[in-house]
Image (cartoon, rainbow, N blue to C red):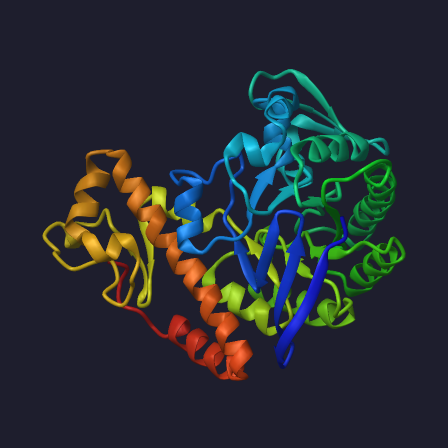
Length: 375
């Protein structure tokens, strides 16, 4: 299957696009809710669709460990297993292996690591990652990469990047060996070093992959460093291919990246924040667990039209949270995902209207303005 990406409108470097995949169309810029284990926590697929989600992210690393590809294959693929009929992007597992620094050993063939579930030794290689993602049936599979740590010396970043590029070649060859259910995206690595990022991009362009991601960011680097990497790298990325910034997810970070030409995003932030009582609003993030909300009859955000804000008060959500009621996590997650997906819809509309730069300036100024103490 060949991904079809159309750029429908531009405003500076920002792009309004449309990505056509095996299981449907994704309007870009788009945010992908994270469904690591084959579920976006607390949400049914129908609820996600109602919120405006068109694509979700699943994780190769976690799904291969639990429940395993045999169980998923018995259902047909991940779409049928999780009852999600729209597109799925699957992470390769590279970042999860990176996060297991004390439990893994990297060599040219791949990675050996101890399972965080039972301690058993597990082998993950580019070929195994492609086999798992093929079984999952994802619309977008990601190349298996060696995520560069931050901070990292130039020599270490180069070694990691060059290994990722050798693995990318193996991923492409193995994924293309037979009928693939989707398309394969490459991941640009190179740490904070512009010359390494350019070398990585050139290596991936030679593979003629239908989409490219920027990896190795959101790993602890300062915002200024991340933006510098994007400003140096993105203009050199092909305009006709979708660009995916992996794991970067604060609302203001998304707006900044769209300004620089990024099309796809994912992050656990909206769902994880929801489960911990932190809710996104037009006035900033609030902590629903704070006592100030105990008798507050107003909605989480008076300007929000989500199901949660239309029907329940801050006092009720705080009550649910304090009582550890499952409904509290569900309502908070509905609200936070609505906030993100509504932001993406507004971004697309402003790019199409040609006034996104002005919208972004105002949005970023509001988010940067001195705020009252977190409520």
